[in-house]
Image 1 (cartoon, rainbow, N blue to C red):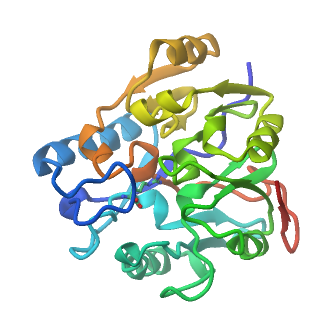
Image 2 (cartoon, rainbow, N blue to C red):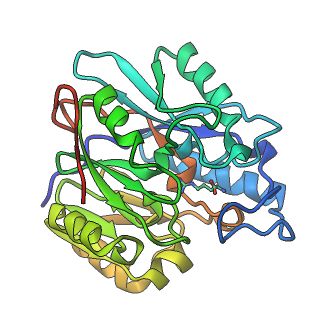
Image 3 (cartoon, rainbow, N blue to C red):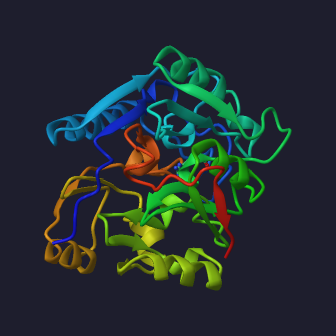
Length: 296
Ligand code: ARG
């Protein structure tokens, strides 16, 4: 059996109090179709309780009334403990101005909780970066560029964290963050939807995954199956088609389904609302002083 991921047991989540669809910045969003606040809250509460029941920890950040997408906490920033023990967060510089105020509250939270912070860009100046595009796997910090994150952001990301970044180019408007198309499962396995990526990028990422679970565009978009989190040997997912369940269970994973339909209206699911705080450089990623970016 392949070794479980060491990270993924501690998350930051944003209370869904102000979650609404005020604008449409991805193909899932429609201002005519609003989430039911009570159901959204119940789904969020169940996800939080599930993580805690599985032995995980959840820290909660208060939402901003002016930021209805802040419930998608994955996009607040990329956080990791650096090799020398310092906790460091690279804050997102959102593509769309509608989401930029979220960073004002995120930086306060990281400051107050013992994290150093840095920016790749701010207030529309400099490259954009959204942390839902960035996940460690097989010695690389895999970073999706295109819809939300600029390639120019990756040099700073690599240098701030002292890691090797593999740049993969996203070409699919419906999979505008890498976490809609890629999910590390354990040290040898990951869910991947190659249709989300430029052919060379898809190949480079497939080459990195010893045992890939390849899903179709239709599976990724209609089930949000790649937008899952993994706690030890349990995959917490919004839904799981039988074909995917068979593969995951064959690999020894247990599936926990958490209904996320209200959160899907904004274009995000389990992963989008949970930002891992327990990634460690030197454990989950090799230390590469000065950083390195590998293009594909
Ligand atoms: N409405 C949000 C946006 O378009 C959804 C974010 C989903 N988050 C994610 N990590 N994929 O920015």
